[in-house]
Amino acid sequence: MVEKPDEQGIHQWLDAEQFPEHLKKYWFQRFKIWQKYHEGIWMTEDSWFGVTPEPIANKIATHIAESAPKDKTIIIDAFAGVGGNAIAFARSGRWEQVFAVEKDPKTMKCAKHNAEVYGVDKKIVFHTGDCFDIVKRFMGKNNIVIFGSPPWGGTEYNADNIFDLSKMQPYSLDALYKKFSKLSKHIVLYLPRNSDLNQIARYAPEGKKVEVAHYCILGASKALCVYLGDFDFEGDAEVDGDVSASLEGPLV
Ligand SMILES: C[S@@+](CC[C@H](N)C(=O)[O-])C[C@H]1O[C@@H](n2cnc3c(N)ncnc32)[C@H](O)[C@@H]1O
Image 1 (spheres, protein in one colour):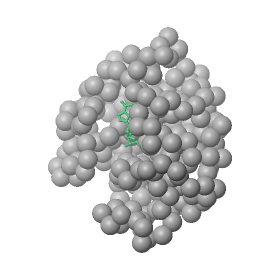
Image 2: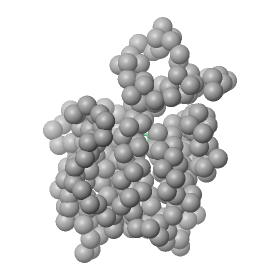
Image 3: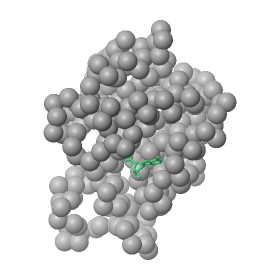
């Protein structure tokens, strides 16, 4: 699928010389991020900073598929970006419906195209718009898991030893939780690896636990996922190829 993008701001970089200098480190990681990169993946410049690398997206998709209650049949990827997670959810085959919501139309165009590269475009329902408006449409359904990999507010999160989730931009953990928990008690958030676990623990629904899984590539933690709701994990650490996950939880 080497179809070329026909819109400014959407790119299919196939050689190093065209690749923007300030993003160079991502050029060397491109096959770690997308195994099918050479089959024509489309990206915007910004999406390199936020895309979930494929091995991690697959691992998260497996974890959610195995641990979510069986009566949850719909998954909403609220911040779909260029499709890293939504594609992995669709490929897992676990969901009756996968909804991908992305507010930026160019980024969404990349997500749709990338899903085509992976052969799962027909398995995802794409919504261009604000996830907080779109999730309202699902109100009243009780079979939904919401996954969110929100923007973290640039690369500032690397600067502090512990990342203060009340300062996450443009949506704090509190803002995300308040909006999403109106729709579902099963929420998974992909957050900086150095997120403040004490802040996360405060969002344990009454009588329930919160699990936190770190996702590592080549031994280095890349990010963590917070699992809010009745997710049922069995093992507490696993390694699969060069991606591993370890559980912190339960945090109560
Ligand atoms: C960290 S990226 C997501 C990356 C994604 N997981 C992937 O693998 O490509 C966050 C995305 O959320 C989008 N976004 C920000 N606010 C949004 C909102 N209110 N509704 C929907 N999308 C939003 C941004 O445009 C950006 O593409």
